[in-house]
Image 1 (tube, one colour):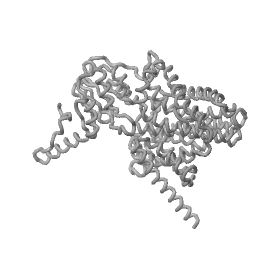
Image 2: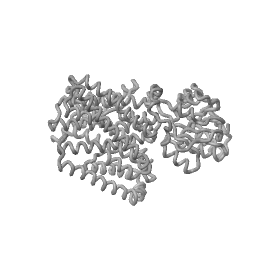
Image 3: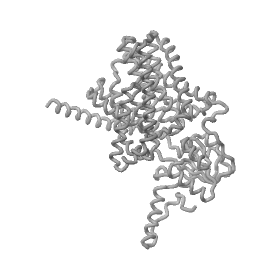
Image 4: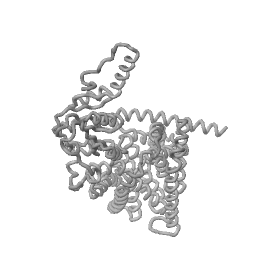
Amino acid sequence: MMSSILADYIFYEIAALLVLAAGVGFLGLMLRQPLIVSFIAVGIIAGPSVLDIARADAQIDLLAELGIALLLFLVGLKLDVQLIRTLGVVALTTGLGQVVFTTLFGFLLGRALGLDTTTALYVAVALTFSSTIIIVKLLSDKREIDALHGRIALGFLIVQDVVVVMAMIVLSAQGVGRATDSAYYDVARVLLLGALMLAFVAAFTRFVASPLMRQLSRSSELMISFAIGWAALLAALGHYFGFGKELGGLLAGVSIASTPFRDALAARLSSLRDFLLLFFFIALGASLDLSALGAAVAPAVVLSLFVLVGNPLIVLVIMGLMGYRKRTGFLAGLTVAQISEFSLIFIAMGVELGSVPESALGLVTLVGLITIAASTYMITWSHQVFAVIEPLLGPFERSDAGAHEQSWQPESGRYDVVLFGLGRYGTAMARKLRQGGVGVLAVDFDPEVIKQCHAEGVDALFGDASDPDFVAHLPLAGIRYAISALPEIDAGIVGEDSRSALVQALRDAGYRGQIAVAVHSQTAGDKVLGVGADALLRPYHDAAMQAAERIIASIGMPSAVGGGDRSSLSVGA
C-alpha cells in the first residue's frame, strides 16, 4: 500500500515537472531564449530554493543518466576512427594546455581574491572542467557537431573528462597534496580497465557489430531497444570501471558507427534523447543551492569573467600556435566558457573531506550558474559574436593559418558553379551538374564530406559558408551561378540564417553572377530574395510537381500542374 502511494506521488511530481518545463520552455521560446537556460530555470524553480517540489531525486537522476548515455551514444555514432586519429594531437594539446593554464591562472586569481592556498587550488581545478553534455547538446542543435571546430571541441572535452576522472580518483583516495600508494593503484587500475574496454569495443566493431545490426534491423523496435540497452550497458561499465558514464556511452556509439544503420538509429533516437536530457537540466538546476551563495557574489563575478573570457582565450592561443584559423580557434574556444557539473562534484568532495569550507561550494555554484547561462548564449550566437570581435583576433592567427584545415586550393577560372552544402540534395545536384559538363566547385563544413569528395575526384573546399572572409577568398571570377543547398535552420533558435549570411557575403565580395538558394518555406525565400538572391530552389515543391506530372502522364491525362511562381528557378533554366 505504501509503495503504491509512493509511486503515485512520484508520478504526480514527474507530471508537475513536465508541465512546469513546458510552460517555462514556452515562455523562454517567446522571449527567444535557449531551451537549456529555460530547463535549468525549471530545476531552480522546482528545487529546494523555491518551490521544493523536485524530491524524487533517484528517479530524476536515473532519467538524467539515461539521457546522458543516449546523448553521448548518438555523438559516438558520428565519430570516425580515422578522424579521431587525425584530430588526436590538437585535442590532446588543447585539452591539456587549457587545463594547465586555467589551473595556474585560476589559482593566482583565487589567491588575489583572498582564498587560502588549498581552497584556491580546489577552485582553480574546478574552473578547468567544461560540461560535455551541455556543449554537445548546443552543437548538435546548431548542427555543428560535425564541423571542424565541433569535432576538435569534442576531442578536448573528452580529454577534460579523463582529467576530471583522474583528479577525483586521486582526491577520493588521498586528498590534495598527499600522494599514497592507494591513489596510484586506483589510477593504474582505471587506465588498465579503460584499455581493456577499448580492446573489447574494437573487437566488437570489427567482428560483431555489422552482422548483429543486420539481424536486428529486421525489427526496427528491436534495433532501437538494443541501441538503448547497449548505450546504457557501456555507460554502466564505464561508471563501474571508474572513467565515467559519458565515455562509456560514447564508446557504445563508436562501436556501431561503422555499420550502415547508424543514420537510422540517430534519427529515431533523437527525440528520446531530448526528452531524457530535460531531466538532466532539471537535476542540474535543482542542485544549485541559492541559499549557499551569500557573500560570494563579487568573487564569483570575477571568476566567471575569467572562465567566460580566459578559457576561450587560452584555447584560441593554443590553436593559433598550431596553425588553425582564428575562426576555428574562436568557435572551439567558446565551448570551454563555462564550468561543468563535475566542478560542483569536485568541490563537494573537498568540502566532505574537510579540505575546503562550505563557502567554496557556494562560490563555485554561483560561478556555474553564471557561466552556464552566459556561455549558452555565447555559443548559440557564436557567429555573430565572432563577426563583432574579428578585427581584434588578428594576433591569434599565424600567417600560414589554415594548413590544418585545407591542403588543396582550387584554380581560378575553372568553374561555372560554386555549390555550398553537400547534403543529399547538394550532392545529387553536384553529380548531375558534373554529368552535364558543368565545372563545379563544392563547399562544405564537414571534413569527412570533403575527404570523400576528393576521393571521388570532386573539387571541394572545407569552409563556413557564412564566413565573409572565407567567401571573399573563393575563386569567384568566371562563376556563373552560386548555389546554396545549405539546410534550413530556424534562425530564432541558432541565432543565424546561414543562407542569408552567404548571399550577403557573396554580394559584399563583389560577386555579380546569379545566386540560387534552396528553401523550404516562403518566409525563408522572401528573406534571401531580400538580401540579393536571384532565384529560389524548392526541393520538396519541385519534386512533388515532377512526381505529379509523371503520374498524370502515366494515366494519360493532360498536364494541369502549374510551374511555380516567378521567383523559383524553373527546370532547365
